[in-house]
Image (cartoon, rainbow, N blue to C red):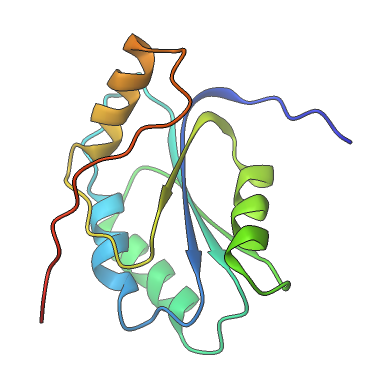
Length: 136
Protein backbone atom coordinates (compact mmCIF):
# COMPACT_ATOMS: atom_id res chain seq x y z
CA UNK A 1 0.00 0.00 0.00
CA UNK A 2 1.24 3.46 -0.91
CA UNK A 3 2.34 5.67 2.00
CA UNK A 4 0.40 8.92 2.15
CA UNK A 5 2.38 12.06 2.91
CA UNK A 6 0.38 15.11 3.88
CA UNK A 7 1.45 18.73 4.12
CA UNK A 8 0.37 20.87 7.09
CA UNK A 9 -3.12 22.27 6.58
CA UNK A 10 -6.79 21.31 6.43
CA UNK A 11 -8.68 19.28 3.85
CA UNK A 12 -12.47 19.39 4.19
CA UNK A 13 -14.17 16.38 2.61
CA UNK A 14 -17.83 16.52 1.56
CA UNK A 15 -19.39 13.36 0.16
CA UNK A 16 -22.38 13.88 -2.11
CA UNK A 17 -25.09 11.77 -3.64
CA UNK A 18 -27.78 13.81 -5.39
CA UNK A 19 -27.25 16.76 -3.08
CA UNK A 20 -28.40 19.57 -5.38
CA UNK A 21 -31.26 20.49 -3.02
CA UNK A 22 -28.91 21.13 -0.07
CA UNK A 23 -25.36 21.72 -1.32
CA UNK A 24 -25.51 25.45 -2.14
CA UNK A 25 -25.47 26.79 1.43
CA UNK A 26 -22.77 24.30 2.42
CA UNK A 27 -20.51 25.36 -0.45
CA UNK A 28 -21.10 29.05 0.25
CA UNK A 29 -20.16 28.58 3.91
CA UNK A 30 -16.96 26.74 3.01
CA UNK A 31 -16.02 29.26 0.32
CA UNK A 32 -16.48 32.10 2.83
CA UNK A 33 -14.34 30.62 5.59
CA UNK A 34 -12.14 33.16 7.36
CA UNK A 35 -8.81 31.36 7.24
CA UNK A 36 -5.46 32.92 8.12
CA UNK A 37 -2.98 33.17 5.28
CA UNK A 38 -0.65 30.85 7.21
CA UNK A 39 -3.13 27.96 6.99
CA UNK A 40 -3.38 25.76 3.90
CA UNK A 41 -7.01 24.91 3.17
CA UNK A 42 -8.88 22.99 0.48
CA UNK A 43 -12.34 21.55 -0.03
CA UNK A 44 -12.81 18.15 -1.65
CA UNK A 45 -16.24 17.31 -3.01
CA UNK A 46 -16.64 13.58 -3.62
CA UNK A 47 -19.24 12.85 -6.28
CA UNK A 48 -20.63 9.48 -5.21
CA UNK A 49 -22.62 8.72 -8.38
CA UNK A 50 -24.75 11.86 -8.46
CA UNK A 51 -27.38 11.82 -11.18
CA UNK A 52 -28.59 15.36 -10.53
CA UNK A 53 -26.75 18.67 -10.95
CA UNK A 54 -24.90 18.60 -7.61
CA UNK A 55 -21.40 18.96 -9.07
CA UNK A 56 -22.00 21.76 -11.60
CA UNK A 57 -24.04 23.63 -8.98
CA UNK A 58 -21.28 23.33 -6.37
CA UNK A 59 -18.64 24.44 -8.88
CA UNK A 60 -20.76 27.42 -9.98
CA UNK A 61 -21.38 28.54 -6.39
CA UNK A 62 -17.67 28.20 -5.54
CA UNK A 63 -16.71 30.25 -8.59
CA UNK A 64 -19.35 32.90 -7.84
CA UNK A 65 -18.03 33.22 -4.28
CA UNK A 66 -14.56 33.84 -5.75
CA UNK A 67 -12.93 31.79 -3.01
CA UNK A 68 -9.13 31.92 -2.90
CA UNK A 69 -9.06 28.28 -1.81
CA UNK A 70 -9.25 25.27 -4.11
CA UNK A 71 -12.40 23.21 -4.58
CA UNK A 72 -11.38 19.78 -5.84
CA UNK A 73 -14.03 17.47 -7.28
CA UNK A 74 -13.41 13.75 -7.49
CA UNK A 75 -15.67 10.94 -8.68
CA UNK A 76 -16.16 7.75 -6.64
CA UNK A 77 -18.13 5.18 -8.59
CA UNK A 78 -18.58 2.70 -5.74
CA UNK A 79 -21.75 3.67 -3.89
CA UNK A 80 -21.61 4.35 -0.18
CA UNK A 81 -20.27 6.83 2.34
CA UNK A 82 -17.31 4.65 3.32
CA UNK A 83 -16.02 4.49 -0.26
CA UNK A 84 -16.62 8.20 -0.77
CA UNK A 85 -14.78 9.18 2.42
CA UNK A 86 -11.87 6.87 1.61
CA UNK A 87 -11.55 8.54 -1.78
CA UNK A 88 -11.58 11.97 -0.14
CA UNK A 89 -8.90 10.91 2.32
CA UNK A 90 -6.77 9.41 -0.44
CA UNK A 91 -6.66 12.61 -2.52
CA UNK A 92 -6.44 15.04 0.42
CA UNK A 93 -3.37 17.27 0.44
CA UNK A 94 -3.27 18.19 4.12
CA UNK A 95 -2.70 16.48 7.45
CA UNK A 96 -5.95 17.52 9.15
CA UNK A 97 -9.06 15.97 7.62
CA UNK A 98 -12.47 17.43 8.37
CA UNK A 99 -15.66 15.76 7.24
CA UNK A 100 -18.74 17.87 6.64
CA UNK A 101 -22.09 16.57 5.47
CA UNK A 102 -23.54 17.95 2.27
CA UNK A 103 -26.24 19.83 4.21
CA UNK A 104 -24.03 21.42 6.90
CA UNK A 105 -23.95 25.21 7.02
CA UNK A 106 -20.73 25.90 8.85
CA UNK A 107 -19.79 28.96 10.88
CA UNK A 108 -17.39 31.31 9.07
CA UNK A 109 -14.55 30.51 11.49
CA UNK A 110 -15.12 26.74 11.68
CA UNK A 111 -11.95 25.76 9.84
CA UNK A 112 -9.77 28.23 11.75
CA UNK A 113 -11.16 27.11 15.13
CA UNK A 114 -10.57 23.45 14.38
CA UNK A 115 -7.04 24.15 13.15
CA UNK A 116 -6.37 25.98 16.41
CA UNK A 117 -7.77 23.12 18.51
CA UNK A 118 -5.64 20.55 16.72
CA UNK A 119 -2.50 22.70 17.02
CA UNK A 120 -3.03 23.03 20.79
CA UNK A 121 -3.80 19.32 21.24
CA UNK A 122 -1.88 17.32 18.61
CA UNK A 123 -2.52 14.06 20.47
CA UNK A 124 -6.27 14.32 19.78
CA UNK A 125 -7.53 12.06 17.01
CA UNK A 126 -11.00 13.55 16.51
CA UNK A 127 -13.05 16.59 17.44
CA UNK A 128 -16.82 16.99 17.30
CA UNK A 129 -19.02 19.96 17.90
CA UNK A 130 -22.43 21.36 18.63
CA UNK A 131 -24.96 21.24 15.81
CA UNK A 132 -27.98 23.49 15.57
CA UNK A 133 -30.63 22.28 13.13
CA UNK A 134 -32.13 24.64 10.56
CA UNK A 135 -35.68 24.04 9.46
CA UNK A 136 -37.54 25.14 6.38
